[in-house]
Length: 112
Image (tube, rainbow, N blue to C red; front, side, top):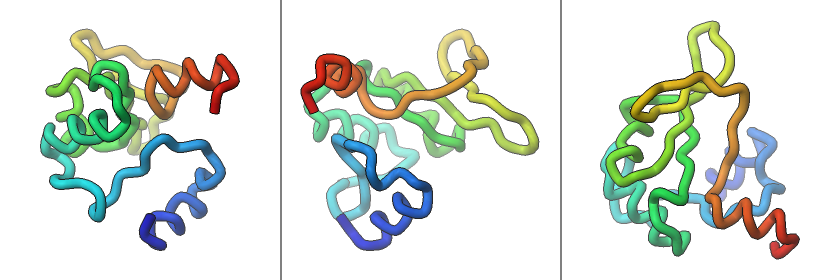
């Protein structure tokens, strides 16, 4: 993983989490906001896109994940709090999750 990516994860307090995949330009063939970016990430994880949750803060950059079947949670900005779920019917949710449903299942089963 490039040093700059590691620095960002440390800065955000996320470097100690058991990530299945951290995307960056050295391992991806395209970038946001292309739907192919999200599809490739799911492929690298070994899961179908519908088993993934994209967590972001920009509907233009992160919203295209919906085109490949991912659920999307966006962090609200501009003085608001909470999360906004992009779906057929948008709903505000109290929190968020990061990773894939497969990852969550492994964590519940204690298989890291």
